[in-house]
Length: 101
Image: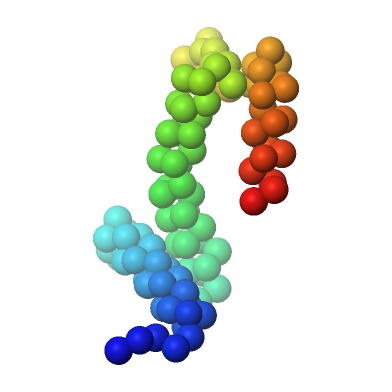
């Protein structure tokens, strides 16, 4: 059977994604309980940040590997990232091309 409305499919996908985020949060915090507002403000935000952290780390690693950004370690051993100014033309070109799509 074909789906008539692709919008409803997207809605179902986003509903499933939110449900999984809530379940992941509850798996990590089995005694949690909150209102809709609290779930939005605390659970989903916290879970989204946790899940996004992995993506951000991979993106940073890729940009360092491509020499687009530079990484240094501070005295507390944390990594600090900054623009590689030698690559600014390439970076601007990449951003322009991405903005066209």
